[in-house]
Image 1 (cartoon, rainbow, N blue to C red):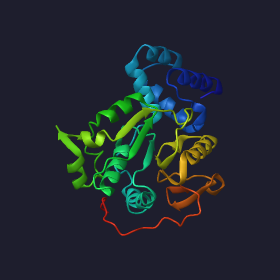
Image 2 (cartoon, rainbow, N blue to C red):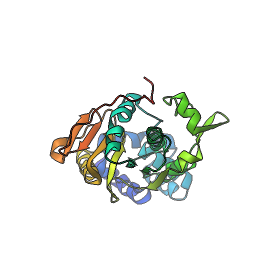
Image 3 (cartoon, helix red, strand yellow):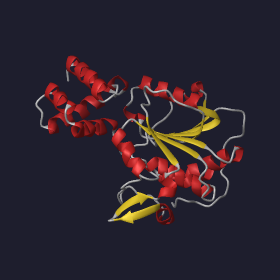
Length: 277
């Protein structure tokens, strides 16, 4: 893909979709764009962009493709076990109710996973504040509705949590109202919109893998500023915070970073496991 063509695409995507492709790794994004145009049925980008301007369904499909809405409940169960048995108890020792942000929440699986863990840790007390944001309006509408979710979405969900927090209709799973009402969903562009802190826990998993290094560093610094002292950032299994110590983070474990303070390191108390091995 020539630079002139890619610059044109970036301009149109920013205008129509609101996504700045300058923040994404160029080779990977160019491959994704080429694949999408090839199967779209349009011979070139100008005709494609003219078409989606008058077709909101196709515009939404294109935006979904660019923003990569892939998630599931308790994705990477081992990391959620560590969150449950170590991170949350430590945070809850300092205050009974937490302020949590699921950044890049897609269709809500991550946000509802957090809501379930907090409800279970506090004996079904629903007074935590959980904010879930994403750039994709259609994904947020799905999340606000509480589904429907598939059997693949709930594959890592323990049976007791599935029974307690979901209703099943025609082999589809819907989040029950009492849990659904605990999460506030808002549209938000991680790379452009301001962040309203302060949070005890920020969860941003498998979102920044296509970001350019400078975009990642800028976002992680903003996350640091949005955390309370001692607050924790939870990232994806293949993601790391570069120069974490220079940014003011202390590495707690793989995928977990704490905004540095002088308190003792996070411990691992003996409590029941909500997520089975």
